Structure formats: structure tokens, C-alpha cells
Amino acid sequence: MFNQTIINEALQNSRSAIVSKIQEFVDSKRQSTGAYTPLYDLLTDYPFRMGKMLRPTICISVARAVGGMGQSALATAAALELYHNAFLIHDDIEDGSESRRGKETLHSRIGIPRAINVGDATNVLAVGLLLENLSFLGVTKTLNILHEIEVMAQQSVEGQAMELDWVADNAAYLTDQDYFTMCVKKTCWYSFMTPCRIGLIIGNPNANASELIKPLAELTRFGMLLGIAFQIQDDLLNLVGEIETYGKEIGGDIYEGKRTVMLNHVITHSKPQEAEKILNILAIPREKKTPDQIEFILQLMRNYGSIEHGWDLARSYANQSAELFESLDFLQAETPVHPEEKLISEYHDQRFLKELINYVIYRNL
Image (cartoon, rainbow, N blue to C red; front, side, top):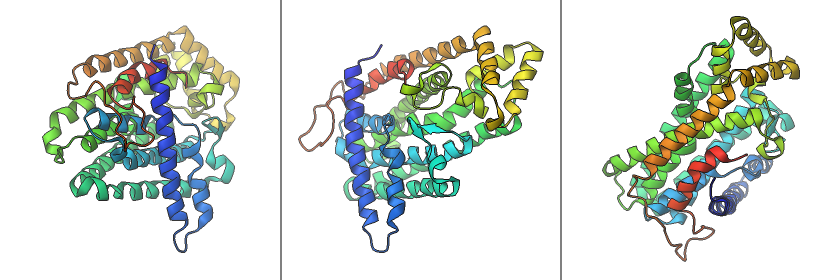
């Protein structure tokens, strides 16, 4: 359902470029006078696991699709990946997750206090990368990017707070709209909307963001629609995916009590006694839930069409993003690779963004 060559080559080239950039930056910090070197060995754990590298690839591709250089977006793209990994470290602790990208979660391996500190250090490292922009993007664009990051971070922590509160309160009868509100804040801003917006700011020759109001608004909506489709598909894979490719425990969201579209749907559409039993199971601490209890909820999801409901919603939002994408006339069809663009794929442009639409809902990881 999507061109695997374009997707795979762009993501792989991003992985090589971002890993190199992060390694170079970590090494520079490790070698500074008085540095506590064991910390820096841990900073490359999550970033160097086989993540998808979606956020950096989106940022680089938008920057090049509006005529910019991929190298100009590299520091910011690497910072976005570090922010993502810092969020993952903290999310895994908050959710009590056991696996991440096919391996043991960091807090399970080194303990919660040390993992929290690694997450904090990863955020600090990202700020250092963003400050590199001063030397080749200038003050105005650098400040605009920092402002985008501040908005992204605020939205993300608000969305995380909503989700954690729902779990803590054992919230019942949440609507699809409730989920969309949380999802836009928690996922869409930092995974799609901000990478798109920053890519435009970097790649556009105009340094004044106020002159980019219309394209920024259009890319923001595109990222929102695509982000909702992506997160619903991610939630679906947590229910029906294969652990070998998905890289996280199957059914983990139910163990954690996360209010996904499918869980909200089954609670709302079940018989009263069934809904009560679901909520009683969700109230049990993660470590005390049993596989049979998880299977009970999964079976009700199958019975009441909750999984199909999620799939239909994901496709609907992906289709809306595809329609909007066709109207983004400020994106060039193709952007030739400049000789100075190292580790940049020829597909880091509008072509990747177009294939991304189907990728987010037909992927298996």
C-alpha cells in the first residue's frame, strides 16, 4: 500500500545521518573537561536502537521539499530524535513498560532513578544541538525553532497528563473526541506537526515565520490528521501486532490501562455488567493483571467491533491527510540532492511525505 523503496531508503539514510550526528555530539560532551563519562554511554542506548526515525525524516524532507538543504536540518532533526527518546524513557517508567524496540526497557535494566536521570540528560543534550543552529541558520530561525520546541514540549506534557489522569481515575465512557484531544497533544505535536513546521522554517528562504502563516497552518493540519491515524494504528498494533516486528509487548496498553479508541469503544458499547468488569480489571495494578483478564477485554473488543472501529478511524484520518496533501502546492515534486548533502537520500522530499500517508496505517511496526 506504499512504496517501500522510498520509505525504507529515506528512513535508513536518516538513521545513518542522525546516529552519526548524535554520536559526534555525545562524544564532544564526553570529552569535555570534568565530564562524568559513564552517563554518556547510556545516552546512546535508546537513540541507537532500531527506531523508525520518522520525526527526523519528516523534518529533513519538508525542509528539502521547500527548497532547503538537508544538512541545514540535521542538527534540529537529531534534537527531535533526542526529545523523542527522552519522552520514551520517561513514558516507559510512567507506564511500567517492559520492552522497547525489541529490548528490555532502560529502567528495567538500570533502575528507575538512573533511567530518569538519563531521560533528563537526553533532554539537555537536545538543547545543545538546537543551539548549533545559530552558526548556520542565524538568530531569527534559531529562535523560531526554539519557540516551536517549547510549544511542542508543552503540548506533549499536557497530553501525557491527560492520559495518566484517565488511568489514575479509571475513566469510563470517554468519547472518540476525548481521545483525539489527548492524541493531538501527546502524539501529533511532537511526532508530526512540529517536525513539519520546523522543516518549513528551516527550508524556506524567508527567516520571518510571520510570513509563513498559511503554509505553516496547512502543514500543521496535515500533521495533525496524519498523527491521529498513526497513533490509532500504533494502538491497534499493540492489540493485534507481532512482537517480533512491533518491538513492544502485545496487549501492553491494556495492562497499563491506556484509554485507546478501542478500549473506550468497548467500554461504551458493552453491556453494563461487561463494562463494569472491564473497569474492575483496569483498576487492578499492572503487575497483578492476568493474561486471561487481558484476553477477556480483547474478546469483547472483537465481539463489539472495537478493533474495526479503530481501523476505520485510522483510514478516515489518513484519507483526510491525503486530500489535504494534494493541495500543498508549496512543496516541490522532487528535490535533487546537492553535493554537500551527506547521508541525504534522493527521496528526502515531497515523495517521502506522500508515501508516509499510507505507511502510517499499513505498517506493521
